[in-house]
Length: 69
Image 1 (cartoon, one colour):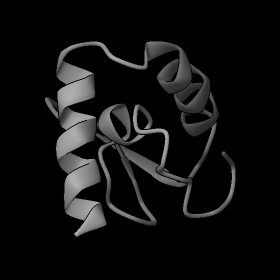
Image 2 (cartoon, helix red, strand yellow):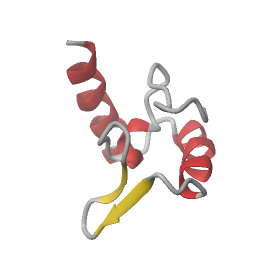
Image 3 (cartoon, rainbow, N blue to C red):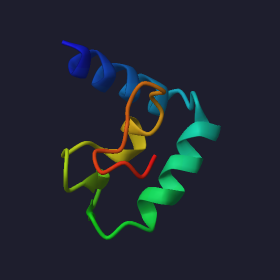
């Protein structure tokens, strides 16, 4: 249930540009990681958890599945 809540929260934060400072720091780390895939019109996806990184990185409670942030 927490995962669904965080997906919705991350999507909301991404759409309305919330927690951008946190997201930018995390995305900088993700963008240097070889464990991501970029899909046109969606963006970067984590190969470990399958999350859309533009949304996941905005949620304070979320963590990198391999411990990078």
